[in-house]
Image (cartoon, rainbow, N blue to C red; front, side, top):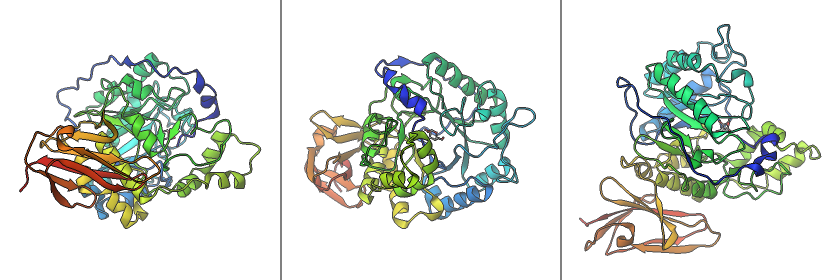
Length: 452
Ligand code: GLA
């Protein structure tokens, strides 16, 4: 969670967030390193659910990923975010696991994952000042040792989070490149996911091209399990009014504006999925850090809880919209809910194979909005069909429509139309419509030329 630290918020206004630049490093991998699949990674991350990171809880999550069908739907990474490491480095300066929480060590956990067809990810930061605030664990100048430690444990994925107020671009390039090189030199193929945005410059991930450095880059600021902010003002450090933290529709729009979008083998990260995460649960689990970051000294804990709880949870309709839009972006799908206690409804949303197929289409093309109607998003797919999303971000019901020719399909006497949420198949002579679309709903169709 990143309700920003006060020091960060205080200088937000100083950041010029307009100039696009270019990260110049090359992205050639040593020839003997296996390639990653070209499609966006899918998995789970521990941060949002706030579950305590212990060997038992991680292995229970892996079991739940297998048992619930998440693994078979494609969610293979189990990523331990901040909190897995012991609070101090070991005698050789190495990162170490907390011996009481991970009695058998991290290699035992990765083995547990691998034995069940899953992959394991860890979290680190070059500075660790602004996020979980454990500067003793900072990886800067420990890159080789840390990368070798991860490789020796059999780790498959590293989330490398900037976590420092200052975000000078040249320094970010240098520091992120150093860890990239250290990971490559291990000889193990570790997916490298960076977040340049955890700083005063929370659009650095979107404004610069990081594809020469990382496999995956956070394009956006942190996503919260809400639609739009409906809380009373949370004081001078409230992150929502300045856009430092966002809900689903605004995060989606921010992710469509990134300089380098997802393409085969490189993915723009719109942040973890918030389906199945109630705002009320989320705020309760992260209450202490919310309290710290807001620095609202005149407000009691109970008053702050009351303010936070004015925010409604995401509805099912909003959660389906979320999955539809992230799939249209070709964004990584990293679930953030507690898989062990997931409801059937959440499981059905997260494992909808028709929607996942849009995300995982090998063409890895991001959706674009129609110039004639910005509520219509279009994504060409590798089999010649086209995914189209009719997105009602407004507060009133609408009916949205287009025609097959406008979404890039060649003229045909008949088109096949599959509704990716109801799974109903229909045909059309050309017109395509959302039907009556409630507030915050998205209709997601896959359309191809020709009818059986
Ligand atoms: C930042 C990241 C989050 C999470 C936290 C951990 O806010 O953006 O995804 O990793 O740090 O402190």
